[in-house]
Structure formats: C-alpha cells, structure tokens
Image: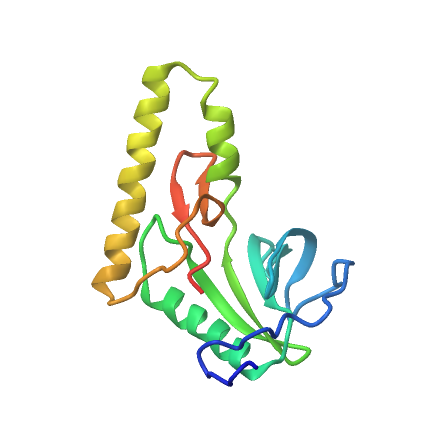
Length: 171
C-alpha cells in the first residue's frame, strides 16, 4: 500500500492533457508543442509583446504536484545566470499553474551530442569542454542559492544555436 507523503505524490500522474495545442494559455498564444513530460507540457508561445517564449503548463490540479511546480517557479526566480533557463513570469489558467521561460532555439544535449561526433576531434573536445564549464558554472550559481538541481541529464540541457548551454527543468 502507498502511504501519503507530502513530498512524494506517489502514483498520481497528470490528468489527460489535450492532444491539441490550446488556443491560448492566459495571455499567451501557443504556436506548437515543444515537449510533454509526465507532469506538464511545454509550448512555444507568443507573448503579448510578440516575442517567442517557452510556456510550461502543469497538466494536473493535484495539490502536491501543484506545490512541486510552484517550487520550480520559485527556484527559477532566484537563480539569475546565463546558463540557467530564465523565468519570465508565471500564472494560472483553467485552474492549473504555468511558467513562462525564455525560448532557447537549439537542441537538447542528447541530440546535439549525436551530431557532434561527426565533427573533427579537436572541435568535439573544445565543445565538450565549453559545455562542461558552462554547466558547472550554472550548478555553482544554483548552489550559491542553496539549491540542488536533482535531475541533471542530457534532455534537461539545451545547447542554443549561439553555443550557450542552458540548464532546464529545475523542478
């Protein structure tokens, strides 16, 4: 039997999220789905000022998961570093919270690495060193705020088209 733990919501999963991209989420206009995880979907949206943003919308109203998501929002608001995804705002829509983040044009580290192996060795090594240094700097910035990422993995690192490595998914 599963015992109740306020930190671990147990087997609760996101309610069925619509397969279609919603027409709006708050004042943001979704253009397309960027990704879907167990708890939330991330959309490329247009902000009211026309800029592109990434919007993460929780797929449940389950209180323990809402609290966990709100903690991610709070964490992102505390960490200001070029290699940590920037929080631009947050809100509620249809009773579920959302997080607005900078939109990073590029690939996740898993896909980036799969393409990098085709490059000359000297270029590969230089890129790996740069990405490693940027991620270490991002983690140091988090640790200076007494925060621990808990889920550093290639799919939670974006490599922007400008070469910047960006740590994401701080939930």
